[in-house]
Length: 459
Image (cartoon, rainbow, N blue to C red; front, side, top):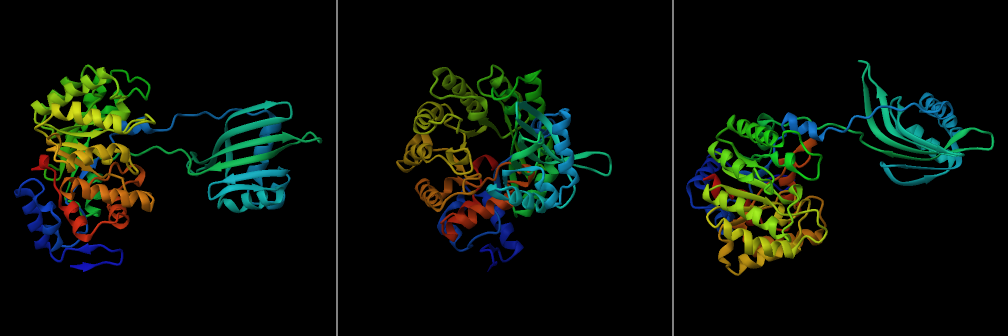
């Protein structure tokens, strides 16, 4: 084995990797997960399994598409300001005439306010590499004050338009009757739709990270979310999304494993679980936040408990995203989950996503309840595991140190690597493994143990 410049240690031979894959597949649950067993192997280039991944179907991608906006027609005197700004886009002296003496500018490449006509004009002239214009989407004018909101846009050679940024302008009319820009705020990049991610693209992502297998969690719960507008034919949409995920995973049966999903509060939840079980899924993904689950409400607890019982009866693992939008989320919800939900699924793996948070980072107040129970040998936690998807991303040293402490308290044998959805190139398995490996203060043997962990539901 040899260590690379970025701190990764690569297994010395293909035979060694094959031996580890065989040992992980044939041995008892997480047998390769002990630090002592992993110490001799040092740190691997990538984990064996990504236990928290998503695809993005064409239908789901459409739900992420930005809403359509149509340009508005401005009054001639305001339209003239935008027209002139487009004409002299890289001419500082000409741009100066469009701004007030005390004009202010904010743009994200230099995230602070800049004041003064000349300073603003010089910055705007140097900011863009190519000609552009402002597409106005809304405006208002009262007396000598006006505002315009819109996109920064470029016309393309094929006749299309690319909106590459956002803009807000505040304007004042001077004593000479001319409108000038008093404040300008720019934001980049502009609106963009997420392209679909199918099984082939996910395979490329996990290959780049040296990962052998991935658990694909359906996004069907999106279609029953109270956070969005109701979906016409909701149950049909949920079924279609689950079916698409199952079909995609089936393209690579030796590498991808499908979990279905749904809102556990819906009256069709158990029926959809049964339907998916008949199609051969290994588990279900429940997203409490997206589904509006509130564990402080007894009726919600009972609905989720019914789903847990059904999953246990069908021997389906459960991946549970427990974090919610409630600003007080923490210990109370964890205590309810531990005492009232876990006992309803005693025979299957329950995988708590994002280390009991929402990622990036995690919620230590909630995690402490589970960590203390595991450390105390609470029998309810016998089949409890934790994935660490996005936990280490963009966190302070203090949070990362506490993260490592909790991993040791729980035990590395219960920690499952996961990276979450790679939408827009974010959270790719390679990037997330690099963040976890490079930032979390664990030992090489601890990293190797986590990298070699394989959840029991994959055996």
